[in-house]
Each structure stands twice: as C-alpha cells, then as structure tokens.
Image 1: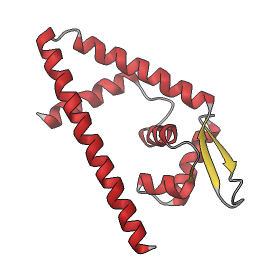
Image 2: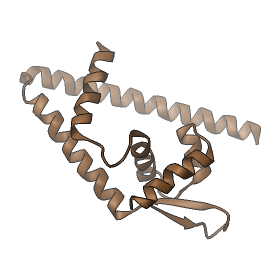
Image 3: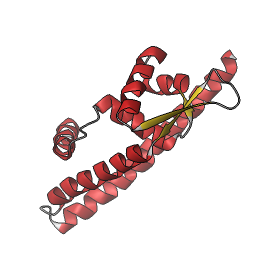
Length: 147
C-alpha cells in the first residue's frame, strides 16, 4: 500500500509538472531554499554527488535564472549558492499547482478519511523530522571524529 501511495503521489505531482526543472534540479532548488548560501561542496554532499556534476547542474539552473552564485567574502575560492527571485517564484508556483492537484483528490474523500489522513501525515512528519535530525547529528558526530 505504501509503494502504491508513493507512486500515485508521483503521478499527481507529475501532473502539476516541475517543468522547466528536472527532478534533480528541483532537489537542488529545495535544498537552496532551506540552506541559503550553501557552498558547492556541501551541496554535492547533500545530493550524494560529485562537485563537478553538481556544478554542471547548478550551471543549468543559473542559465535558467533560478540560481545565483557569489564568491564567498571569507574565501574567494569558495562559491556560495542562492535562489534567485525567479527560483523562489518557480517553487511557490509549483507548490500552488501541487496543492490544487492534491486538493482535487482530497475533495473526493469522505471527511472522516481526510481527518484520519491528516492525523497520519502529522505523525509521519514528526517521525521523519526526528529521523532526519538524528541522521544529521550522527553525521556531525562522525565528521568531528574524523577531523
């Protein structure tokens, strides 16, 4: 059931279209939204990718006007990445389209089932946030031990 729900959600999101950004590019935009000014190496680590591949991905996003790069004031060799106004507008528009697509499905559900779904999603969000937080702490502890 979980995989079916995930697949149906993917179809629903696909209808809301992420064009003109690919799924990988969308992931970069979402990371930049939450980690403003992240450097390329850290972004590559978040994507489990190499810096050259991540740089090419960011080149395409910059060419589309979604990402801006700036040289770090602390180290001229380091590049900081930021969402542009166009990138922020794209994410906002995408969220509206996704909410509309999801709302159309939710409107077809009985009220009691929507309440149960909301309660389940709240529990899911709490558990996922805790796991991400724990993974982040484990990663920092591992980095401190290897430094």
